[in-house]
Image (cartoon, rainbow, N blue to C red):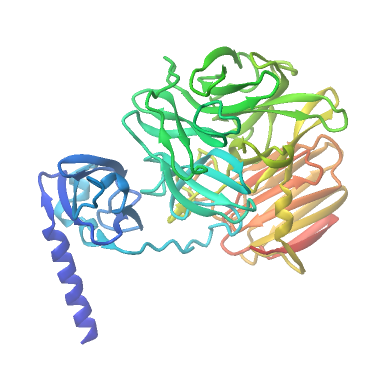
Length: 573
């Protein structure tokens, strides 16, 4: 009897849902939605074409989004917040909204629109479940609660809080609908989601950028105000700004946006920073395959200074996500500038990666110390991209985070509720090897807090410290025969990671790989962080870093070391 009642209730719900849908053509529908509950849950089927949805309130379009609405199978649900302030009229919440939905796809293969499963599963709810249902979701890395994430954006530190913004699609776990998601942390490890403070407008969707803490009120928005710079991605890419008086929780967009424009199609990712040497602000952004440098006294009016990049480093892809920091070279006291230049494609093992240049910068022009044909990589794994640093970090630190994926397969990795994580936080420095200066990369000291008791065997979330004497080989494996082999060659001074037998690689021919890094000297100790679907390896002195994703059927619970000794630590998260 209970089963019959459940079936009848489901049929009534389906009929009710259908009754609110107006079928206008073979690809066009409208749906009236009551706003008496918090969310409208949108059913997503990733294999389907994008449907374009207009949210209409009192005959005005108040939001637009693209979502792969389910046709015959629901992969997961995503929430449309019915309490979005953008929907309010005269500061009052509307009782209903109208969704204007235009489907893509071929009706001959997807069937009649009235039969789509999305109409039955598109329901309102006061809750949306963000609990971890993904076995590959990392435990101690930052991830979005749901949806797609790529580049870290706008990172800054203020009043004891680390702020991380990120490229975010709230309406699916593939790239689309770019806006800035926002998370905060007091320890760089435990993150709390804070919403989407900068969203698309008439100038376009919101691409990558940066934030600065304006300590001296050069902008006129107040001492300590937070000023954001981002790319407005419309028909062309222009640069916009916004400011926050509440520490980055909400932003007011500058009324005279855009503040910078160009006739180059790839013109994006502004990174602003205060330059003590000239007592002015600098801004660097990517323009095709070069970086353009600007200066300003007030964060609004920018003067073009120079460009860098012609003939230098790797040019096999588009330059993106720049950064510039002045740092001290270890053991010398000399100060040099690091210019970060992320590139896609063109990475050392295919796809996206982070290259950098070391040189001098006078606030107007950057000059590289290396010869033009020298390319330096910050991380020699396949899954380290869009690296940028936090503004206003304490104690003169240079703290960086990266997007832990690769454009070759980021949309296809075997997760659904969410896609992508950030790397663990890393502190950057400079060191010399021969006649060249390189960036050192070490796990930020906050990671030490996570280290718990010693374990006999690896787990899906652990840290390993490996002391090596000469050449060494470390093999992680599980009972399914899956393995990751890491090899340090003391003679060649190289470190490699082989993930060709690591687990699931069926989603992309580009995933299986052996990655190899120069070590710039002898390695005596390695630190290895394992977190369900990622392995990050560091030379303890910072001269080598390697980040790779893995998708094992079961956790690696065996470790074999030849030429060294591994100590496994619990990670407390």
